[in-house]
Length: 216
Length: 112
Image (tube, chains in turn yellow, brown):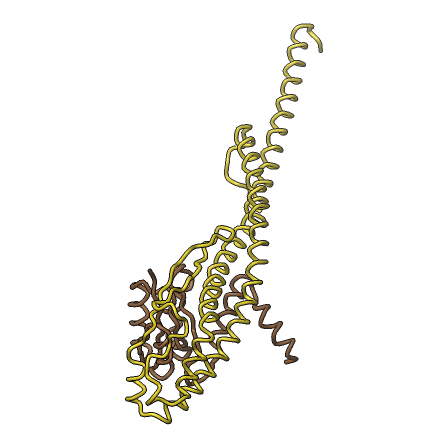
């Protein structure tokens, strides 16, 4: 690992030591964050998969009934039947903070209070299969919204985990070793200087003594 | 106040209209991409898109992947389930963990 390009002075040494302590603490915190994020993420992903399976199955069922309905009635009358929806859905969004990842939460709001008010047509001229198709879609509606919520949360958390993991790795394998190496380098250099100063002083002392007592 | 949209071919999404979801018919990748951009800019928080269309505009989908809104969710259309939605979940896992450990669990539990 390369030693940083700085002057081997005592001031730099103190600075570096302080930085190393900060880096170590940051590393520990980020590691904890990563672990907790990962735990929550895996829980969410499992739920995501479960919901997706259920939703896909439900939509498949609805599509099947819709296909039957379409075969019984003309395209035009199907269009007319579904042209003017009685229900209008809107979303309220609140945000939840999970380990500093902002995750949106959806609250659905219906225009009409009756949740069963989903049939936008009179029953006289439409086949029962259409009713079944619409009903089965409305049945999986809560799952569909939860899926949107969970899937978005998963995507956002995945990005955050990736970021955190990179930071942890950078600290662990690059920054901290580099600081340690540099600190060792500076300490060695300072020790060496001290030793050379000592020997120089001894030498000077010898020379002065020699001069004073006329040795040799 | 946010809204919900469904994008896809008419047969796949017409049922959603009765639930109060706004439906937008789109055939072909270009039209779908354009619709998606328009909806994302126009207060739609959840956009359901058929897997068939989604597979044609994965680049567009990836753009919204890491934004808080909108949530673009692939759903199966009348042409059936292509597995794209599940693959997308796997992609998230791969990004976070480094490899898709959950799908592998599924596969091994099924004995494949």
